[in-house]
Amino acid sequence: MNQIKPWLTVYGLNLLGALLILAIGLWVSKLISNLVRRLMTTRNLDPTLVSFCGTLVYATLVTFVAIAALGRLGVQTTSLIAIIGAAGLAVGLALQNSLSNFAAGIMMIVLRPFKAEDFIEGAGVIGTVELVHIFNTRLKTPDNRTILVPNAKLLNDNIINYTERGTRRMDLVIGVSYDDDIRQVKQILQNIIAEDSRFLKDPEPVVGLNTFGDSSLNFVMRPWVNVPEYWPTYFDTMEKIKLRFDEAGISIPYPQRDVHIIEKPAVTD
Image (cartoon, rainbow, N blue to C red; front, side, top):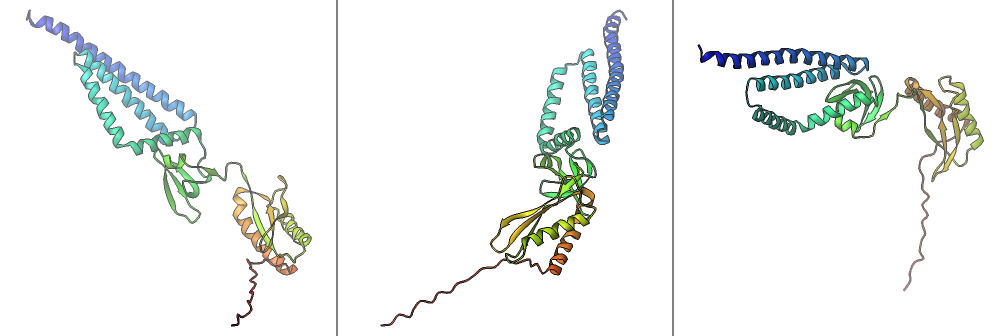
């Protein structure tokens, strides 16, 4: 017993210290994890990101607490830390693409270049944003297909957000014949804009002769509409232009070329 008492005293105190470190560390880790979740929730970040980051913070802190507790027991933690670091490096290399998508997902959720229900174009696709995940973004195309775009690919490309500003300009180029009255053409296009209440008064719409083409005089028509009404207004406007031009006898020419045949005189001996 005389030989066991010193051993119990030393190792008992170490064991008690390790248990205290473990208990307090777990409590503090949970506290910090919940604090991180609350802070991210108050910033209206994506719930998936909030859950993932909270879990990641908790797991990281628990790892440090476990290492500290083992160190208190006299375990050599240097080699353990080296093993954990090597394993982390190997996992990082194996999941390089996934980690880049994860980092890009966090950047998009924090910077918010777009949000759910925005109509965007990027990474070679176009559609309405349904959900921004940690590793990819889900889009719904106008023909009701679902596209999952890797976040890294989307973030590294140009992103066009058609919804963010609420309004959108309709850019139309209308070609007419050189024989038509350009004043009449301009008046018809202005009347089409004035008669449709979906076109906005501010910014002021623009109608004008733009270029002298090879086969036509090209007018531009640039009215503004609200984003949800863009495509219905676009289709109706294109139909009205054709019908009004037919009524007024204005032609929309197709590309033409004049071919001149030059006959060489016959060569006589």
